[in-house]
Amino acid sequence: MHGIAATALAVHRSILCVDVQGYGGRTNPDQLTVRRGLFEALSEALAGSGVPEVSFESEDRGDGALIIVHPDVPKERLAGPFPPKLAAALERHNGSAPPGARIKIRVALHAGEVLYDAHGVTGSAIVTACRLLDADPLKDALRDSPGAVGLIASDWFYQEVVRQCPTCDADTYRPVAVSVKETHTRGWIRLVGCRTAPTRVHRLLSLHPGAEISVPAAAALLDVPADETGVILRDLRLEECAEGRFRVPALDDGLTGAERTDALRRVLAWYLGTADNARRILCPDRITATLTLPDAPGLPLTFTSADEARGWCEAERLNLIAAARAAADEGQHDIAWRLPLALWTFFFLRSPWTDWIESLGDGLASAEHLDDDRGIAYALAGLGHASQHRWNFEESIDLFGAARDIFVRIGDRSGEGWALHGLGYACRRLQRFREAVVHHGRSLRLAREAGERPSTGMALTALGYAHAGLNEFTTSLGYFEQAHAIAADPHAEGWALHGLGYSRAGQGDFDAAIVHYRKALDAFREARDRPGQGETLYNLGRAHLHMGRHGAARHCWISALAIFEDLQTPQTAGVLARLRSLDPRS
Image 1: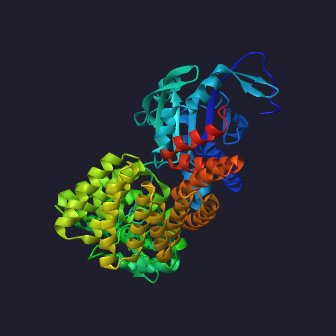
Image 2: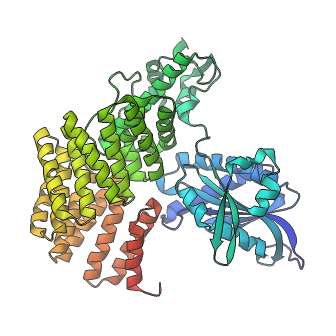
């Protein structure tokens, strides 16, 4: 805002504050990409909302911006068209950006008296807007939202602008108490870009009845390669009205109830099959059963590499969430309980736990509606894992115990092994290591009897950690060495190497521990396993501390903290405590 004439008297302005979620834990190149995407999205959304450049000043805040809007711009433009246009622009950025450069932002709206000087603007109204932006309810709401924008309006702005304007969607706001430093007030939160935003799940089937679509256009709508699109359209049984052109029905118009259900089922089944193909490449040791439908009406995509499968999951993340919701809402119950489990990789590596828990809960209800014991057991086990990642281990034991009992009753030995692994992990976290050894031992026996190599490796690694918890490091080392010898993918290799490092540290051989931890970190980075990276960095820092390398320990823990904060996991508190132990003043 340099160059703005100073004013002796305060002038009334609309105030827009913006802050990027999780900016500090990113790499420098990702931060540059985020900043470019943020300011391009702000510029596009402001212009599209009728806010010309001459009518506002923008101050760069590093990981955000302060925008002062002149009184010639009606405030309704900031509360009406601006939020959805900003969300749409950010979604376009996120659709092509690498994972580390995707953007979710908090936005605060307020208005009041401001003063200009040679350095910018000041005033209590700006302080209030900044305090609203830092409100915990807004941070929590955005963290749990699949949308890109979390907006908070001051009570004045909501009462005087939002409530009075039919296009501002006042019923989408909810009141919250704001208490930040010396500011104690009420704000109004709106999440933008979740649930109501159109997704590719519906785009293909939401065209006008009878419309014709070319293969390239369908490829853009489905976000799949053009050379595969024609096959998909034929497998979805859309009418081919000319060479390379298809006639598309609509979900909401022109179809009978049966036709609409059939069309929707084909799209959902295609997503289920493709997601399951991705899962079996990326996390083969998690669920060994095939989750696709026996009568799947669409031909799903297949993948030749982990990078290809991962890229599809990342590109389709919003559609996958929408598909899981649509399956439950539309009564496609056999898809509704399978799809959250097929999305294991997506949820495990990205950790949007609220979405996963919601879709698993819907899946459990669908399985119960069908009286499908297998579906009930798998949904319960999925909820058990979700509970573990929220560190609710007692609840996890109850869920896994119920799942195991059903698996035993129906004779699903693979599912039984999966539930036993979850029980063992929860017992380890609760320091009940003897019980963990029993559960993991049974899981290992079932995996070996079934000849399931990935599950065998997972059980061996788990037994290593259980014995390490009993300080039986020589025994644990043997299990980790066996697991490492049969590791079939970077994810499994990473946890076996991490275990080898953990056992060596337990034996006091910190040099060897550091070597194994560094190899584990490389494996987790190759697998894009961020929880694994965070855990390894944390323990690598502990090993460095034992060697008297305080600087190296601090570096590891700062990197681990950035990961755990981004994933919103409870390990954050433990890492902060470690950092403060190095320097109580920090």
